[in-house]
Length: 133
Image (cartoon, rainbow, N blue to C red; front, side):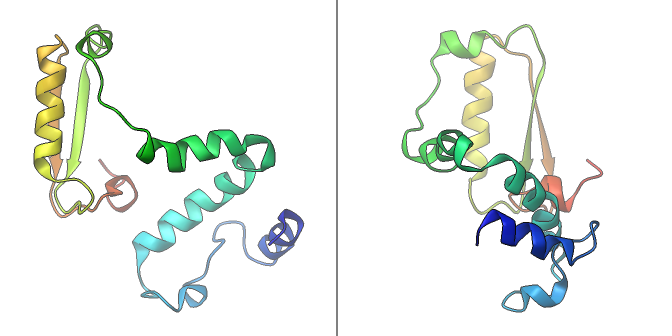
């Protein structure tokens, strides 16, 4: 759908809710997580990921996964001046808990003051489902 069509479609909906539960009929229409993610991210995506920013979009959505590599100790040590808190959502299916433990160890070995905070029952996008944290 072209941007002008998206803009006109968006104008027919209230500005506070871009996606209604009925428009997500293939999903659980009461899924607050899906509604939250779409209603919060869609306006930003429409504004930020146009043709002029395609390279940045490709980097953050594709290359982040396909060209990702680990950090060297020297790179991690640059964070030593600031405290770092790693937040792990315990219902995350994308990353196992040991992924965070390994990264926390790497940060600690590099001299970084690292803290771990776990969020029970939160999925991968816990910031959307548990905003009070």
